[in-house]
Amino acid sequence: MEKKNLNKNKIYNILAIILISAILLIAISDIFPRKSGDTPSNAKLVIKDEISKVPSTKEEQLEARLEQILSNIDGVGNVKVMITFETGGEVMPGFNTVESRETSEENDSSGGTRVITTQNITQTIVTQNTNQGNEPILLKRIEPEIKGVIVVAEGAENVYVKEKLFNAVRTVLQVPGHKVEVYSKKI
Figure 1: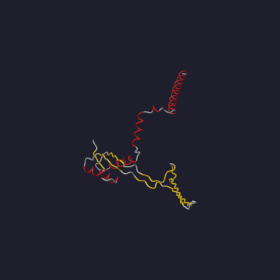
Figure 2 (figure 1 turned 180 degrees about the vertical axis):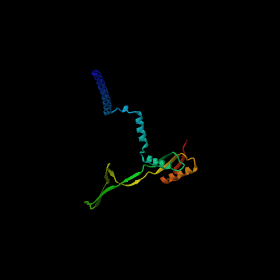
Figure 3 (figure 1 turned 90 degrees about the vertical axis):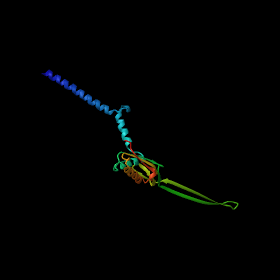
Figure 4 (figure 1 turned 45 degrees about the horizontal axis):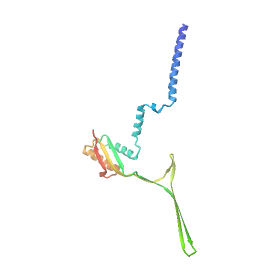
């Protein structure tokens, strides 16, 4: 009977050692960083897809908002929008201007008189402290001028839906009709 208990204890001890070893291996593998080549390929695809979905430029943000709004119009399905801009826009920061002017008059030995004027203008951009650091105070922001808009939408083959899309784009972007084109999307 004692021999059976010893054999059972040996088996339990061996199983306990194997279990502890497996837990240690898993813990150690999480501590050491993986090589860049060890990343599963599907993880890279997910990261790229998430990054590509986030609009980064002003153009892309405006296009995404317009696509979302236009797709909610009655009779419209999936929508794609492309907007081109004439310029990149302008920003006018506030300046602190210090101007000094000095005038001096000189008389020479022959009786002539000279007036010398010196002017010094110093401008520095006015900034404010924010969480991101010092940022300039903007007096005026001029948005870029829209050069043209193309809308490709499901349902645009219907004349009434096409007109709704056309009028919606003209209204929201405040552009003349000759800068807007609406096309039906291929199925």
